[in-house]
Image (cartoon, rainbow, N blue to C red; front, side, top):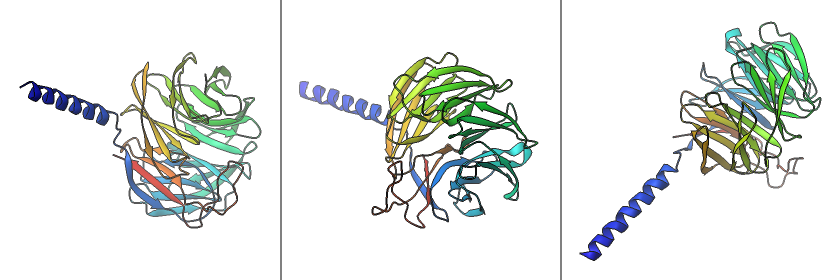
Length: 339
C-alpha cells in the first residue's frame, strides 16, 4: 500500500511538473515561410492592421505581400536604402525612410505609387505614424535628430535635436513619444505638442538599445538591448522595473496588448518571449528557435501572428560592419510565427 501511495505521489508530482512546463510555453512556432522577390539587405517590417498588406523594407524597394497567403501584391521600387515603412490610413498614405538618399517617400496605400518626396535628416531610419498628433516621426541616425512631418500636408514641421543616435520610436497614443538612443544607452520622452524633450531615462544594465515597444495600459516600456537584455521601464518615472535575458542581435520588439506578451526578435536565431503578469511582475517565458538573421519584427494584433524577415546566408561572402554575411540571391523570406 505504501508503495502504491508513493507511486501515486510521484505521478501527481510529475503531472504538476508537466503542467508547470507547459505553462511556460507560449505556443508560438513557425506557421509559414513566405518568399519575396529581389535581393539585398532589409530592415523593418510593417503589418497593416486595416488590410491584408505586409510591407517589407528591402534594399532599394518595398515588397508588399498578402500577410495571410504570402502572395505578391506590389513592389515599390527605385528607392535608396529603405529602412522603414509607416502607415497613416486615415490619410490614405504610407511613408518610407530612405537611408541612402536622406529622404522620405510618400506613397498612396491604395495604388502603391509614390506621390511625394520629403527631405529628411542624415540616414533616416526608424519611422512611425503617431495617430494622436497626426505626425510622422523619423529617426535620423547620422544627424542625431528627429524629423517631424505633418501626415496630411507632407510638410516638415520640426527637426528635434536629440543629441544621440535615435533607434526605435513608439507613441503612448496620448501625447508622448519615446525614443531609444543607441549610442547613449538612454530613452527620451518627447512632448508631441511642444516637441520638447521632457525626460532622459537611463537603462540600468542595458546597453545599445534597439527594439522598443510599450504596454500603454500599464505604462511599461520594453527595451531590447544589444547586451542580451530586455529592460522593462516605468514610462512615468524611468525606473527600471525588470531586466530579463533575451537572445543576441536584437533589433526589434513588439508587445501584444491582449496576450500580455513582449517579443524580441534576435538575429542569432531566437525569438525571446517575456510575459507580463502585472505592472510589477515580468517573466522570461521562453526562447523559440528561429532562422538566423530574423532580427526585426511586426505583430498583427488581430491574429496575434508575428512576421520576421530574413534570408539564407552565403558562408563564403564577406561580412559587413555588423558581422553579417551576405544573403544568398533569391532567398529573401518572411517567417510567420503563431500558435
